[in-house]
Length: 237
Image 1: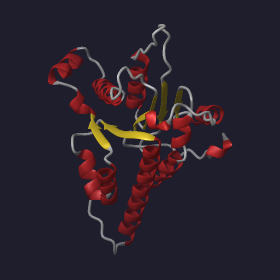
Image 2 (image 1 turned 30 degrees about the vertical axis):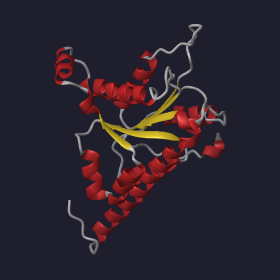
Image 3 (image 1 turned 180 degrees about the horizontal axis):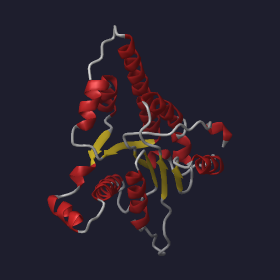
Image 4 (image 1 turned 30 degrees about the horizontal axis):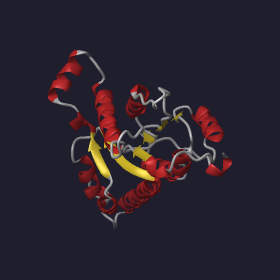
C-alpha cells in the first residue's frame, strides 16, 4: 500500500493510522501501569515488528523502550505436536494459543517459589484466545496446605472482529479506560462483546471498586486486535 501525504484520501488514512497508533500506545501504557503486559499472537514470527515498522514506527519504539514481550504462539508447538493435533482433527489455533498462554503464565508465576496464579487478564478479538485462556485457567489447580483451592482471578474480554480503522481506534480508547477496573476486580469475569446487552450488564454489576491483589501481580496477555464499539463510562459502574 502506497500513501502520499499530499493526496487527500491518503492523508485521511495516514491520520487514522496515527490516531490508532496513539490509542494502542495508551492501552499498553495503562496496562503496563497495572502489571506485566505480554502480547500473545497467532501471527507469523516477526509480524509485530514488520507491521509496526511499516505503519506505526512510534509504537515500535514504545514496545522496544517498554520491553513488552511479544510471544508468537506458533512457536509454542513442536512439529510432533502439530502432527498429533492434525491427526486428532483438533483446533490447532486453539491448542497453540493455549500452550503459549500457559507457558507465559507459568513463567511469570514461577519467579517466586510455590507462587500461585493470582490475576490474569486476556483481551482480544478472537474466540480462540477467549476459549484458550478460559481453558488454561480452568485446568490449572492450586491448593493451599489444607487442600483448599486458591483463588485465581481470570478475566477475559472478547471483542468483535473486522471493524474499520476508526471503529477500532474508538474501541481502543474505550478499552483503555477499563484496564484498571479490570485489574482491580476481585473475582472472575468473562465478557463477550458479541452480546452487547449482556456485556453492559456484566460490567455495570461486576466492575466495582473492590481491589484484588496488588496490580503488580497481574499477568496480562494482551492480544493484538480489538473490536466492537463499547461506550460505557467507568463512572457508571
